[in-house]
Length: 122
Figure 1 (cartoon, rainbow, N blue to C red):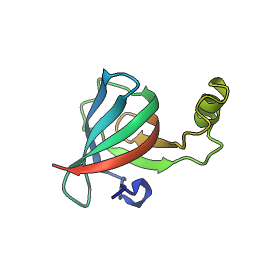
Figure 2 (figure 1 turned 180 degrees about the horizontal axis):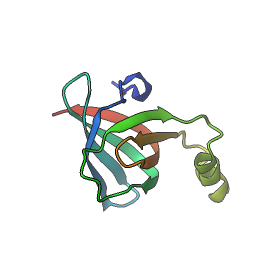
Figure 3 (figure 1 turned 30 degrees about the vertical axis):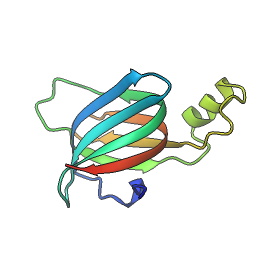
Figure 4 (figure 1 turned 60 degrees about the vertical axis):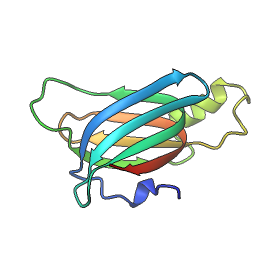
């Protein structure tokens, strides 16, 4: 069952950790995040078949990394469009989403271009 990213209550949930798995480059590029949800038990999100990961995070703040909002961008997102354009048709057959997570605590932003995301209960 596919995880519904937009159906979560993101606001004030806590981003506990991020793990980038490049142990099998090109075959299994994934990003894992442990989220302590505001309204349900914590779980791990696994972004599968990741093609781009961008993060602007600020450190040195003594506070948990609280999430402000998260969403899937429209198809005209500049990073998504730029990715397809930059590869000149090589990935046109691949359907991906651009996932964005913005934080309260440090004003950070994470963008992930991936084919999908799955929730794993922990």
